[in-house]
Amino acid sequence: MANPPLEGRSLAIFVTAAVMVGLSVITVAMRCFVRLYIVRSFGWDDGLMVIALALFIALSTLCMLGPEAGIGHRMVDFSDLDTLQRALMLWWLGQMLYLWSSAVAKVAIAWALLRLAVHRLHRVILWIVIVIVICIGLVFWVILLFDCQPVSYFWQRINPFEKGTCMSTNILLIVAYVYSGLTICCDFTLGLLPVWFVWKLQMNRRTKGVLAGILSLGAVASIGVVIRMPYLQNYADTDFLYSTYQIAIWSIMETGLAIIAGSLITLRPLFRWFLDGASSYRNRSDGRKNSGGKYALSVISPKDSGQTPGSNNPHYWRPDVNANDNMMVTSVTASAGQLREHPSQEALTPAADGSGHERQMSIERTFRWSSGTRDSWFNRNNYL
Image (cartoon, rainbow, N blue to C red):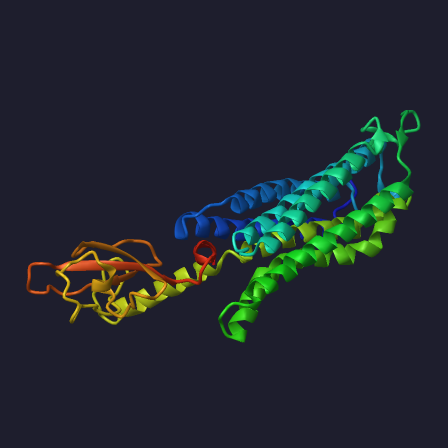
């Protein structure tokens, strides 16, 4: 039982699957590093993206085994019936896995944007997208599952001795076009909604543009769906495995791009982590003695606060804060020589004040908020 050679269209499918799954594994691994180690806030969207990656790995494995079995070749290239049936079975399994890996990846992107959504309308839109993605994926999956009766007749129908029936190809084409159209709408919604998020933020236009661009990366997956649309008619081709190779390639690209782009939007803390590490390294190389890679940015000492040295009152440590401002100072104090290891904190080391109180303060964050948006800004800061 000899398989057709891995060349031409078969090789294109194989290489596409190998490259996309490799990039997806790298980006999701970086995402998990950020969420578990740097931010320490692993959420539902992160778990869903890991599930999407697991499904995509299974899909890519089939898309690498399939070409070796003959997917991408003409019917006349097969030397025996068993090899052809195996290739058809792998194609069928691949399309079933594609639907769920793609759907879970897009739900993960929508769930990530829910972390940032402030207004109720934004959240309603995102939940509508999630419901649509799940529903169209489930409906199309059920239709493909029961396309032929029995199910195995899909790959065994080339055997004249097998008995069974299959759904009309025209019905499958209609469902495929509807599925693709709704998928494009959902993808563009996930791409355009973040622009709405940042439109009224108090920041310069350049920063708004960069932030909106990062958050809109989730729409990149729609590129694969749009390009695949004209090739859907090849479902009806009698030389099925040969003519549908573009469908296979762009389905892989769509899912891989969704996973990669959906993970890239979470990696900003990783870049900051690298930059902070580089700054610490440069300071150490200049001969400055820093503990744990941290360095003193300034010394904050009260001048006229009238507070007891070492007071827990935030105004003691931040005399510049107006008591009437909507500002919250989060601080941690410890004895000298102790440092907190979280990379987002700034270590400030005041000298002894002569009263026996030698303190070290690690300031984590200072928040200023508008009425009604405090929780949302906490979520945004932790996510981005």
